Length: 381
Image 1 (cartoon, rainbow, N blue to C red):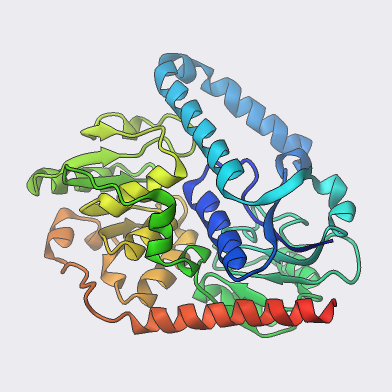
Image 2: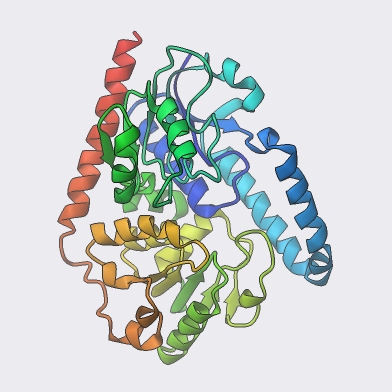
């Protein structure tokens, strides 16, 4: 039986943040001397027929677009190959790929199971595996920085989570708001902790991605939503400041018209390592992504993060993060903040100051994680 199995959005993931947080938690635990690995869990094989048919239908509808933009889709496929190489080459993982049908067998593989981080508990993505609900008694389980990314839960959702949480040894979440949301249904104290990417220091990320400098000064855009306003703000800012505008588009795997004609350089096939490196070397980052914001803070980059108009409930994670660092004014979540004038008038982030609240929380998060792991593993000896 192996020591620690981590289950999160890892297997088959094409999301930069998802893959990098998977790397971070696993690597941190290995640095601490634990035998930890990501569990290769194929959630797609567990999907209902209705969801599979929906995906097939959406793919058929996209065929004309795929023909029209076939050269761009070819680059997207190249990016997916780089993702697979990073997942397989940089992240320790189980040899076997598990599915919903093999959860009983998975329950016998590890002494301790950790779920998280990322949106493993979002009601639209949650499954028995992400809740560590394997249908087997006596499993040692905990969460680290699990995210719900919602402000409310239905009675049915609350009931499902309450049932799953009843035998957790420790529960921690990534958003401050999730503490209050889940406290009424958790049998033990719930903790707010930092995202796994913050468990590794800047120097440790540099050892992974390198410290290659870019000779050009540039602004970087990384948007998952389709709001054209924030793209126009980035374009105007780059022009005003005489910066090259580098854009990482099509990050849901589909071509978006909003991402076609506002860049100076389009970077489609960047690997997860190259994603971090692009943030590391940028003068400023414009994004609506939690992890792009997190890496901007790690590498002390100027940034503005926008609320995704179609996913406003996910703003809690951005708000938690920017509040922790005392840079809430760089979170553009209202109409008056989503303007060029606001960007120009807002003071730059002063990275020379002490981020005491963050450092305290990081220290507490590490203590919480390690103390609970050590306690649980001691119990199973």
